Image (cartoon, rainbow, N blue to C red; front, side, top):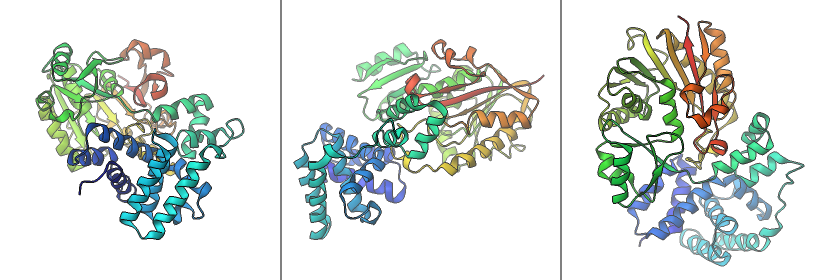
Length: 447
């Protein structure tokens, strides 16, 4: 028997929580395999991502009415309850439908005692949902923002300290908006205008990006990997914040570029595009599976000057034989700038990881700095929003490498973003700029 929309959502939610699967990879696969129509697929998507995103708040609501604490409820039962509470609280679904469907799933999968527990708990929540003891924003803003906007308290507190209450609330709210599908036109193969016409003929809704001339925003595109334009390498799915990085590197035709932690290849292939495929790009990544993906994307996009290399970014002497003109170090990070794209990720992050990552980032920067020629450029970028992984990493690096200094990033940015440059660097925020959160610093080596 074919699975219902709610059963598919429950399966994905449970696997994400149980095995650490990526919802943004698992859910599309399950939907392709299903018999659901377009409307039910949209319902399943909203239910799955919403439940994963709101996990902390849903557990708090359950705890208000359950005699058992959430961590004492069997895992699958808890995921079923979370999913049903999300419908009751945040979706346009009649309460009785949310309760009845949950009870049907419970009866199908568990003993009668579980279905009675689910039925009783959900009916109580549906009846009392307007009487929940939400925190007072004025008295406890961190707790209020955490529960209202589905973020772990430690992230909220960190951002309040960095940005203040108002900007933190806006940032958390932005993390809950469905991310736009943005594609980068591969101008080695096609112009933005021609690709726009072709995709519109294929039924896509396409409009220009906010900042970059090679960016297009696609709507109702479906599975983009199935269209011939994707297979022919005419575009790459990439947010505009990531496109900005290649422009900040400003690679010139004929130069030699080192791209560190380069997989899956979006920035490598973009730089090849900006260089008109003239010069050399050494694209390094330590993970063999990601290197294979890097190779595939280099080939698909026709970036003939790029070479995918498996190597540790802190051990490159055998790979880089002479100084290069520019290095892009898009370092591993906590990813707190792209939480909208990974609704489950906010609950798997830990505060202690931030400090560990900041030292790894410093190590990588320090290791690759030797390979920049005098007068050359070292761009440091991370898709996150933490002081420890951004400004403090740059400050620590400059204390170690006194032959480097911060060059002004503003001339290489789209004009609307230049006013937000601070100390020569920029922190892009989803709430302020409408694109993924990203930090960029442009470092120069003295002559």
